[in-house]
Image (cartoon, rainbow, N blue to C red):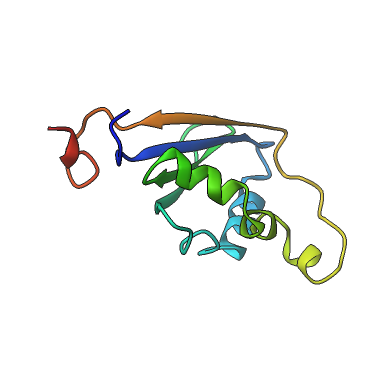
Length: 118
């Protein structure tokens, strides 16, 4: 990997077909929680537009070190707690039935994110 190249982390979360709206609601409740993390470049929550039940949480980072620093930070733990937990209540039942993190480096493309690959 070239130093300073954007790293993409995708959390693929499979949810029951009737639970997607709840997943989106939970992400909206913590919007901006990662925005100030050093090296953070952007975030998208991708909703399936077909009959799939896997949602994608796509984050872009300056480098792997920035991502790992965020994952190890108190902010990560705090941001992944529900509003109820942050208020001293119990955690809600998980929405996802399966989750895995995929790691990618940008190898080409066009526009702003692909400009460094020419």
